[in-house]
Image (tube, rainbow, N blue to C red; front, side):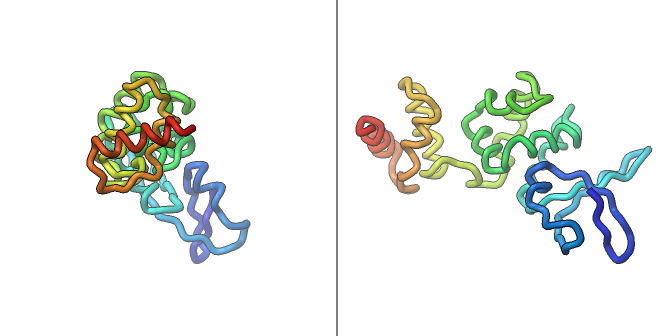
Length: 173
């Protein structure tokens, strides 16, 4: 993508999520950027939100994950989906992204645990919501069913009550 700023054109690499949110050619755009200075090039990356840029920065800090891989991850998952995958330690969601194998997915989940924005992508019910999801999955429910069951839970509900409420929701379906 090429951005003209005061008569100077800048080439930016952006994730697909940012690309699809861009206005029509010639219209004003505001992006959050990250400049990578290498021995052979200066590469500018653009993001629609600060959360995307922060996630990109966390991803490129991981050994063996470069900017291209980080862009692939952010093109394949929203920041909220990535945070949810990390919370649930869901390698399957990451391996669906082109270029991300099982070992890379596992390393990403390990390295990103606790490093993405607090609360982003967590199931309803806050941190306890993730515990409820884990409990329901352990009881044999699918992750999709478990996530749907915790959507309406209050964040301050004690864990045991939250699990009971989620189970009642699942039984009604």
